[in-house]
Image (cartoon, rainbow, N blue to C red; front, side):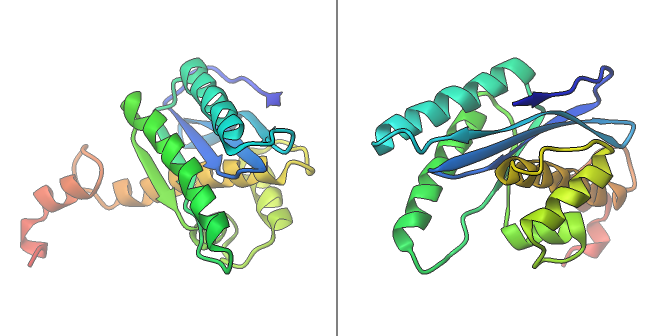
Length: 191
C-alpha cells in the first residue's frame, strides 16, 4: 500500500480492478482538473483457499477503503468474455460485491471495459499493463511501483472515469452534468 496525500478535494474516485487472485485498487483526487494519487495497492488473495474466505477479505478491504476515503464515485473494470467461463463468473461475483458496497453507501458506480480503459488512458485499446502504468505516472506526475500492475490498472480505471465524466460534462450547456441534463437542455436533439 502506498499513500500520498493532497488537501483541497473536489472529487475522489475509487478505481477497482477486480480479481479473485489479486484485486487492484486506486484512489485519485481531482482538484481543479488535476489528478492526484491518494492511495493504491493490491489485495493478494492467493493465500486464501476458499472462495468464501476470498470474498470476505475483499468485502472487508473494499469497505474499509470506502469508509476511510468516502469516494464520490467508484469505477470498476467489467469482466471480459474469455474462454474460461468459470473465471468470468468468479470475476462477476467480485464485481457484484463491489457494486453492493457502492449501492449500500449510495456511491455511484460505473463499469468500463478493459479496452475502453486502455484507450482512455493511453490512446490505444490494446496497450500493455506497462504502457498503462507509464501513462498513469505521466498523468498523475508521480513515480509508481511498477510491480503493482493490478493497482496501476485500478488507477487507470479511475482516470478513465474522470476523463469520461469530463467529456460528458463538457458537452452540457448549463451547470448540471450528465446525459439527463443534456437531454433536458437539448430537447430538440432527441427524436
